[in-house]
Length: 205
Image 1: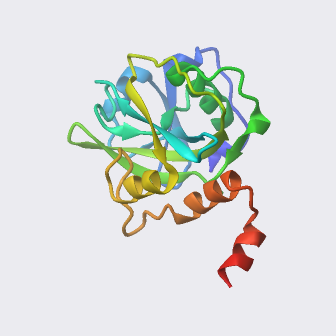
Image 2 (image 1 turned 180 degrees about the vertical axis):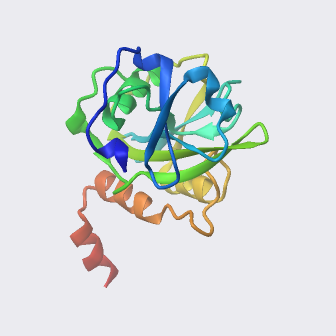
C-alpha cells in the first residue's frame, strides 16, 4: 500500500489534511480535515494502540461527543495526519489523548502485519480506514485526558477487552465475515505475557 512506501511532502501543515486511498490502498488525493465526512467509500489511514499495564489490563476510553464515533468505547486511536507515518501518529495520539509523553519507537510493538481495512459506524454513516494496530506496555497509572476527544478511561482485563471488541461492544466492527482480530489479539498476548510465537505453538500442541 502506498502509505508504507516513500513519503510525499508538500508545504501544508500535517494537521490540516488527510491522505485519501482507494480500497486497494492506492493514494488518491489530499483532503482538508473538515471534508472527511464527505468521503464516500474511500479510505483514510488511522492508528490504534493497546495500552497494557502490569496487570495485563487494557486501557479503554469512552469517546467524547466528537465528529467521529461519539460516545463509543475505543482504544487510544486517531488519524494519520498529513505526511505522518503510522508510528509518528500513534506517538502523537498517546500524548494528546491520554498524556503518555516521550514514547520511543522501540517501545511500541506493531501487532498487525498489514494495515487492516475497517468500516466504523458514525452517526449513521460508515467511515472507512486502514488501521495500524500497536501495543504499548506501561507502568503509568495517572492520565491527562484530552476532553475534546475522551470522556473517560477505564482499565479492562485483557480477555474481557478482546471479547468486547470481537462482539461489537466498542467502535470496532464486530468480528464476523472478513473481520478477524485473532492474530492481533495473539500478538498482544505474546508481547504482554512475555512469550514468543514459537512458545505459543509449543503450548498449543
